[in-house]
Amino acid sequence: MQTNFDFIVAGGGPGGTPTAQALAQAGKRVLLVEKGQGLGGTCLFEGCIPSKILRESARRLRELRRSLEFGLCLPSRDVHIDWSAIQQRKHTILAGRAQAALQKIARLKGLEVAFGTATLLGPHRARITPPEGKGFEVGFAQAVIATGSLPSRPPITGMDHPRVLDSDAILAIDHIPSHLVVIGGGPIGVELGQIFRTFGSQVTLLEAAPRILGPVDEELAERLQQRMQADGIEIHTGCRIERISHTGGGVYVEARDASGEPLHPFAEQVLLVTGRHPNVEGLGLENTQVRHTPQGIEVDSQLCTHETNIHAVGDVIGHPMFAHWATAQGLALARHLLGLPSHFPAPESNSAVIFSEPEIGMVGLTRAGAEAAGLEVEVARYDFAGDARAQIGGRATGLLKIVFERQSQRVVGIHALVEGADDLMGEAALAIQAGMPLQALAAAIHPHPTLTESFALAVRQYLAMHGPHGG
Ligand code: FAD
Image 1 (cartoon, rainbow, N blue to C red):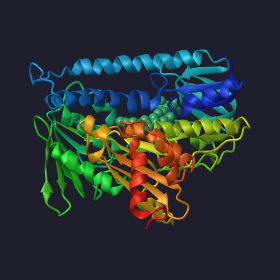
Image 2 (image 1 turned 30 degrees about the horizontal axis):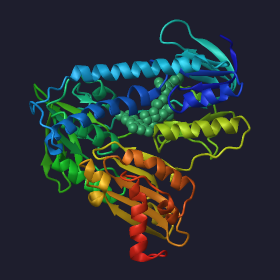
Image 3 (image 1 turned 30 degrees about the vertical axis):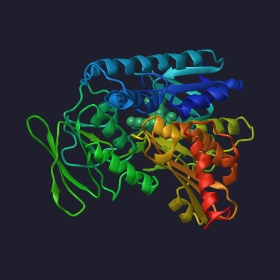
């Protein structure tokens, strides 16, 4: 291996890998360093993909249980869940994707991959320490830090008990817990809580904030909470966790609810998902001018740190923490580093899906967010109860909200709670990115019967009731 590179990229997740690829494709000599088991990062090994694989099995189980509603009589109502087969399917998909990532990289001249921990020794030198064998040093002109994030562990007495798991551990669990207490009502807690509830766990969810899914549109979050409760998940918001105490066969989470009443749900397993923190462990930032806070590495609007030849992307620079966001930042940064015109992604046009049941999809600003930003906005709404496609699929509950500026009619936010919201968000992202006016959403001819018609129907309904300037 050569020892001098144009670029070193630390971290082979959805932030670092596409950045390294784009730089190498432009003819640069790039070293991509990854300390984990393969390329793909949290997203592939402990995040987006494994959680969605488990969720897919849960989704199919729910569908099977509803067969009679669709006129399908199965020989038995009992579905045997083969948990080890579900986990095996997960392993097979992850291994295949990890291998495909390496094969793709191998085709790129100029891009070398080193498996080991990258530690900066100064602004132009790094040490690579492989899991086994001798380490080595390399020189570089520029560096990109994309080392992601790690699960946070709040200081709760008893949290070191082996029955207290983080999201990495629960995704690899070898059985379905009988009683699961989820501490944390963010996207990961909601998603995993619902998955295990579908598989038969008794689930209790404890959230410190007054409501689950804090930054999400309040009405959609409330509707989802009602659905979760109807599905048998016990939810307590405004909770204070006091300690985790253990018994022979499990643990008790001792807490106080919003009115100060004691709660002590029994858990065979506790899932602690109270957030993630940027991962700067072992990076050697102290040997450089790069500064960081608990929120992440500090960067300017072009993702440059306080060390002018070192940049950072993805979870390591803080929220929002999404795979597509890390990739968008990495690709914009690569263009910028190559001297090409580049648009760095703006948080107000980011898209996200919470893979709850049903999903919540969101792009851009909520009404509350837009008003806080000083915009005068209106909201066009559409209830999926009357939607053709939703009725056909037996999923006619949910709501679409399109937030737009009153004066210019520019769409600034789209939010949906409906089964299939994930697939609606591509069009929503385009509309926000293009700064589309409300009427343009209705002018596009949407195929019938699909959920995408909801965009046009929401706008037409709004215009019929309020006219073009609303109020
Ligand atoms: P990471 O993916 O964390 O990659 C960083 C890489 O850097 C890791 O592979 C790590 O091993 C490596 N590394 C760390 N330190 C060093 C070092 N010193 N030297 C070399 N390598 C190092 N996002 C979505 O968009 N959609 C989802 O559905 C979704 N679901 C999720 C579900 C769960 C349970 C979790 C935990 C996360 C989920 N996310 C989801 C978030 C998503 O996984 C992250 O936002 C994304 O992976 C961040 O990408 P990244 O490249 O910044 O960091």
